[in-house]
Each structure stands twice: as structure tokens, then as C-alpha cells.
Image (cartoon, rainbow, N blue to C red):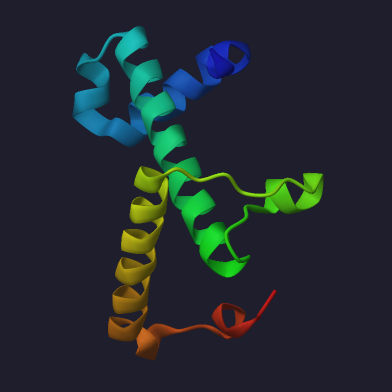
Length: 103
């Protein structure tokens, strides 16, 4: 698992972040929760990057890889783009200067 090198520090921090629930979880449950959150964060970032960089992630751009998305991934990407546009419209007043920077 990715977290093997950092188990003690990472587990302690994760337990603290999870509060009372984290104290009741086994090490394996905490590691699984961390892996799930890591995967979800990567997925969200990939979708955001694909929206900005014409269907590619930064990693794909860096490596010169063309995107190969199946139908489910394309539908998921479209839903994310719609959600993000709606969210951005609702939160326009809180937009920061860095949000306006184009790649």
C-alpha cells in the first residue's frame, strides 16, 4: 500500500482528523479510508484537469498521452463539468483572483 512508509505518522494524523470515529477504527480501516479519500481526490482532480485541458490530465499532457475515455468515463466527465459550472455560478461572489487565471 502507498502509505506503508508513513504508517505511524499518517495513521496518527488520520485518527486525529477522524475524531472519535478514528479512535474506534482499526489500522486497516484507517488505511482503507485514507486510500479511498486519496482515490476520490485524484478522481476529482483528474476530472477538473480534463475540463480545463481539453480532455487531458496534466500527467497526460506532460507525457504526451492522448486521452482514451470509455463511455462511462465520458458521461462522468460531463456530469462533473455540469456540476462544477453550477457550483461556480452559485459561488461567483467568493471567486479569487487565482480562479481567473487561465492555463
